[in-house]
Length: 330
Image (cartoon, rainbow, N blue to C red; front, top):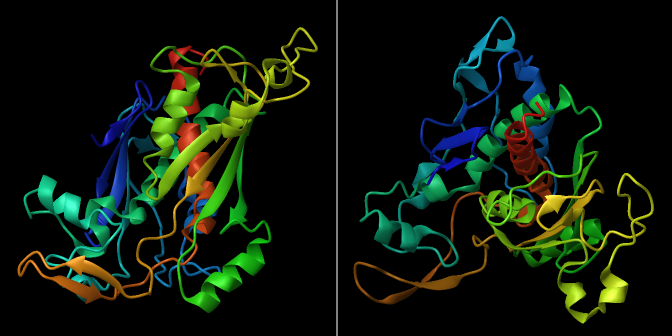
């Protein structure tokens, strides 16, 4: 439910307006150097309040390591890390218990948890918990870098609202005072061939599983993706040009038969518009049974995709670290 991985096993906990959010990583090898400043860059890239179109809510996001670290190195025991929630305004969500927001998990969470869920800021379903995914990914990248120094994870925003001019698209969303979707591309380079466990633990399966833990992700494609449906095999096949498996093209996105082939893994994701748009919407009042017009309060992203790249890199690192550990390569 809240755990991912076979050897590098990540458990996530917390709610948006609870005391803290955090992770517990079981299976982290001993002897990995780790300190608070290792988390700073990626956590700051994920933060709101730093760029046009993102939420005004800005947290310090300073991790606190509770266990699994001693004298600057991981011990091999479960590594538990939290981030305290400080900048919360729970009063913004006082009406949500009876009037769920369209597009959010409010309604389905109330059904599943019989009304006992923490609805403030989306509770356990909130994008706030992506800070935990980033922390797990930072640890994963530290583990990978001990033996695979050339492995890199790099994601970037390709489109906002279908526009490749990101700055113009963000400005348009701000002018319209409405949320808008995005397309993000992620590149994983420097991997050896042969990682993956088909059928059900193919590389695409595992990355997709991890990626869909990021709220707002609605689609994923690898390599040529959906455009391959209109291609001939002679066009789509990637010619192998040396004994290391390098190919002249990369329509397969670095994966054949569910295994890495030594070329870059390339995939793209679709990020939906944030459901909490400033525009007025309609929803049902669960107490009265009447349809009401609502305007969502709180502080939200107009272009949530701007904060997704570091999260995408980090969940990818979680997958790759687990696969390398499965092969006893770390």
